[in-house]
Image (cartoon, rainbow, N blue to C red; front, side, top):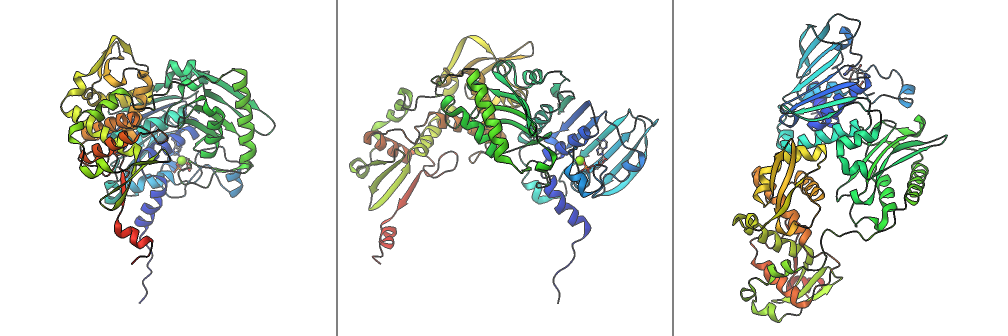
Length: 557
Ligand code: ADP
Ligand code: MG
């Protein structure tokens, strides 16, 4: 009996759609790209429920003819290419003619569009890929596309449904990315009825940087500009002070926002020790290369492209940035480390607290070695134990801070600023911030709103010496990316993320010297923890090599 069957069309479409639209942000990105391809100068995006509930994009672009509205949602329908040659000289975002069809396969889709020379528009409503309404509609010239109930029929995808907050944040980021490429376009983003971004058209890209990232970035970016017969690029690089512990690169090639780890690393390398290890510089680069040098057709979501002569381009860029650096005399200054890498008094205090409870006898006697300034190794009941000093300390601090938190110590030991400090948060951080305020406040922060500006009145005591804007940006980023291995409800998740962050930043690192006495305290403290075997991120703290394992290893049978 034959077992190979042809899949029903609906299933084929859903599988294909999965490659193009896997999350609400990919739908938003596709709709924005269509609006930009249509030459719009005004684009408004309205999102509800992180985009799962609804996404509407309205533009004032060239619109579609009635006949085009009626087929635009079908697979492989595009007005942007007609032949393989067109694919090479492509200047539009779209070319596959798949986005609307994919969206129609995973949600309800309404497309309404009017061309300027028509007196009215045309509207179609698509359910499960099938047109259920097709009728005239009164509307201004342009296009309005609405998507609702995304992924409702797909249990698997629904199960993976990422937190709504995270999805909203991804959408803000994606709008920001495109807005940095199209400074002449007015972008408005509304989330659950609240306007979170309104970037008006500006004549100078630096104005958009100021609007999106705030004064501090505006003041600390250096323009870069280069053009030769082959390549040209322009944009901004950040001075070391605005580097961050998370990636801050906004790179585009031929008007396509891309992620290019190799190029980002090359640029990071120029900064060398000007910024702390694991920090990333702010980079905004819009690059143009000859069409025939790139292949855009390698990623269904168009986040990556293939560059033919990548090393040559990279070297032009790095050489240029290096020159700019020299011109601006960015002399290496000692960068204030976020925390001293030595155990500070408070940490030592935490470890010393309950010294009497500590010592199981064997451990008190065991010799503990520090290996490679990273691992602690000792013998206990005929086994060899190996611990990761950073993970161990993180676990101890995590539980300690968490305990304090639940006992409301955090609030009592808050540090109150003499004067409230006005926050200068970027647009994307601000929207995240407003969602997390109450959770942040339970960990010792106090905020106040004055004339539409947020001020911070108090912070948890041991964070008092940190730059508050940087600190918040880092915590918020951490919160939005942390999946929360020990979280459950949203509040638990947020609290977990905050405390994990605090523990991680306070913990001794690989490379720090730990004396034997300190090592002993760390290990004893670890086994007093409720969950001693993993760090708050879920990595193991300790590994055991048992007597049996050793016997096997040496074939002693
Ligand atoms: P692609 O962008 O790859 O061509 P899409 O499925 O995204 O494929 O869109 C199909 C077609 O619908 C486009 O080629 C374009 O002609 C039309 N279209 C979609 N969105 C818009 C819009 N906002 N304004 C004008 N035309 C649009
Ligand atoms: Mg498209």
